[in-house]
Amino acid sequence: MRAYDIILKKRNGEKLSKEEIYFFVHGFTRGEIPDYQMAAFLMAVYFQGMDDEEVADLTMAMVESGDKVDLSAISGIKVDKHSTGGVGDKTTLVLAPLVAAVGVPVAKMSGRGLGHTGGTLDKLESIAGFNVALSPEEFIKQVNDIGIAVIGQTAKLAPADGKMYALRDVTATVDSLPLIASSIMSKKIAGGADAIVLDVKTGSGAFMKDLEGSIQLAQAMVKIGERVGRETIAVISEMGEPLGFAVGNSLEVKEAIATLKGEGPEDLTELCLTLGGYMVFLARKADTFETGKEMLKEALQSGKAFAKLKEFVKSQGGNVHQIDDPALLPKAQAISQIKAEKEGFVIEVDALKVGLGAMYLGAGRAKKEDKIDHSVGIVLRKKVGDKVLRGDVLAELHYNDEKKLEDAQKIVFAAFKIDSRPPQKAPFIKAVVTSKGVEKYV
Image 1 (tube, rainbow, N blue to C red):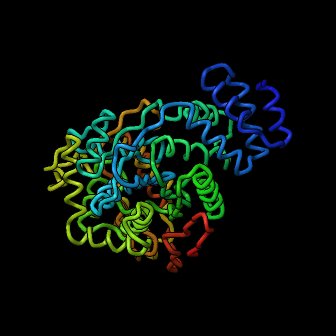
Image 2 (cartoon, helix red, strand yellow):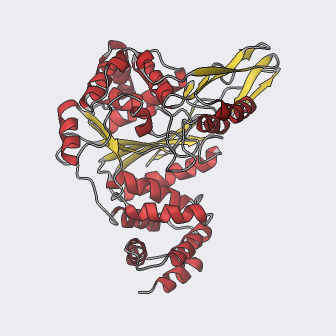
Image 3 (cartoon, rainbow, N blue to C red):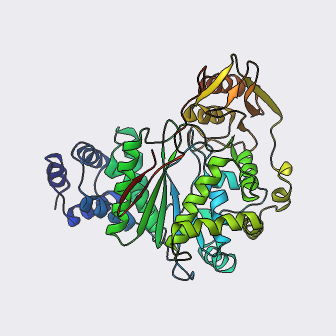
């Protein structure tokens, strides 16, 4: 078998066999197939696509290129959640304790932030002493003991994906449906989950900007799950404006704490109850999604979810006093306000611009090596649909460095669009994709 022949076959639009895909992916991972041939292969896939069987084979080739996490020592059905990334997306901080509070084991591996999207690990590390580097044995023991643990992803998990993504990034082949779907699902499957709930974002702050593209990505991932024996459900949610009000690490932790006390923003609460309802259903703790959702509402109202957060933080070495009193979390030295220059209604808060503004302040990384400032970020005071008067505060920028402030102010001000007429608000949850089809809410 030769790499050249496989590239030629895909370039001509022919279907690749499982053996050909495995040969190419594993050969590249071991360094036997050079970068330039993988780049040619990726471009051929970009233009010719892959059918469902090929995408599933590509996913499993990436899964089997490295270590696989064995969660069989954890009792119960393990359901993982994955988000395609967004701005202000502190969902895991709320969802993991919430779902664990009703008896669903959460054994989660998360990543760090890059660019305008934040990372769960960076947010958790806003809490003093929080340890995201548990050993595999500690990880499994903690899930068995308290029902929840969140750690960093190991580089040995689906290493083919890491190597291939680095090439996609510099060869203009990132936005290929088969390559995106297999990349996301390879890490989830290697992570050992029995079932997967996907939060697929759509809108300006998302990878997929339009709803149809988001639905196609969700369908591709659900089909992969189906083919490799992992029940998978995808929820498509709005990312035209940031999720919740807070963007930035410690600010998002504060908002997650409020949400687990039942005092969180409407959109974040709705998303967590929806994703969580499906997690509880897939874990067979509820007969229907609706029952699962009601169980989670009760866990919020009773205080069980907040108690689980404290137990989780304490178990991983974090300072629980900061959970009881969020004012103890890292705080920026100064706050600058962005104000409305005219009266009207907010018709847009561009999530991408807000995310970039937070990154300019130091809340995110432009490059992997950049250091994060956990205390800085942005708090929105107005969102889409809100009425504003001239001089009303639209957003607050929490900052430590005057030099970084000016660029952030400009881009966050540009994120807001105000019109004399109120916008028509569409549903926040856009669609749900299962193996049975697509249920649209728009």
